[in-house]
Image 1 (cartoon, each protein chain N blue to C red):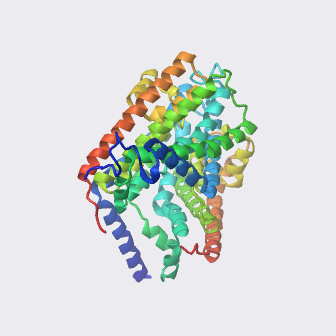
Image 2 (image 1 turned 60 degrees about the horizontal axis):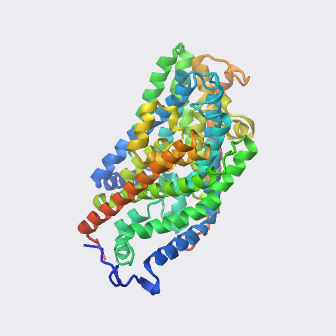
Image 3 (image 1 turned 90 degrees about the vertical axis):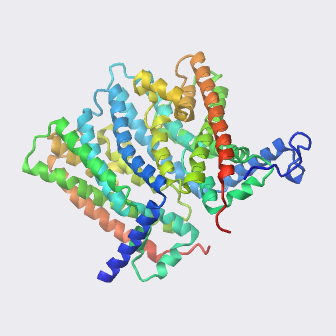
Length: 288
Length: 267
């Protein structure tokens, strides 16, 4: 089956349900995502607690590694940069939502996904809009608290250049899109497998390490770091915004990093659209 | 009793068959279970690429601690790890159905979500442990052999207790989300490294108040024949079984208390 726009032709009418134009409709959907995730307050507290525990763990281990080197810094990161790296990485988990999104997979299994196809916006665009809204509330609630706790217990690096802050925002935005694209693809495997548990397991184990959550990827041999960076989307999800935040390298390096992220965002989102199109041709709604 | 075991066997059998019926997913899942410990080892080796030692311990010595932890955690995860699904049961009100059936609540929950796939990790953990002991040059004595065999077992009792104790929170905190993970997976990561790399309140809380220091760190010191950099005497490793028993007792009491105080969400 194919995705058919439920409204007037995209070129002429431009009107979605309720009289919203299509871009406007996506903004409304994103706002709904923001509000929806702002209601999960208890789960947010629980997640922040867990992120904090892991930030303590990683931070102590990486600082011990830096302390054991001759220069006192590890792979070019000073202890203060490593500390900010750890706490910001745990805070970013809630923004990019590395794990725990099975919504599409569940809808494919139950058959509810068919109602996504009836919407006036493309399914990938709809889910991306919801996810950007979710990332907005995540940035407010889940990023700030770990950084504040980290600042109490460790001397955290303070970005020196003002340009870092807007660059970091852009980098995180790209990271959310890459993360969303990957999660969409993992979930979309259910169209073929019906059960995405296996793919999810592999994503769960690979994403943490390859995104740079457990240790900065620059700890690895140079050729491997760059192979991962160019060849896989994972470093674009955490390592990239974190390098921008702790001001690794010069400005040119950081702009290069963001360009790489933007390229990966384009690739995974295009893949998501392609996979969705193939899936719609194959989709059989089971049950009633 | 035999009748009950037969029921559990059927429940578990149905689970295994159900999961295996999605063949591609099942195989990918198995592959994932093999990849995970390999990634954990790589993570430790990556840290040692940057630093020669960690808290004064070399890579093989840290891998001895990791090996004990990985084996113990995999054992606990295979047997009682799926208890972490309880928060879904409580949130959706499914626990009500479990409570009215004439079988133990804990037993049912464990059987209902049983997975064989995690079992592969036990063997991998044990292999890493043995290889690390060989690399670290452990000088085998009867006492050390006893520690090497028993430490993963009492560590498993400890992690199992943590799983159940942390799951109990779900009875009182409906949307507790990832809260329990901080203790289960967080505890696993904590014990994978020598505890003298941590400091302050965090070390006191996890190492001694919660008892994670006794899972891998002290048994590993005994195996390696090293004094504790934090100054505790050598016989402290033999306290580990007592710590595990205390944890099991606490988890059992917490679980009973939790089940008695369960209030349905009404959904």
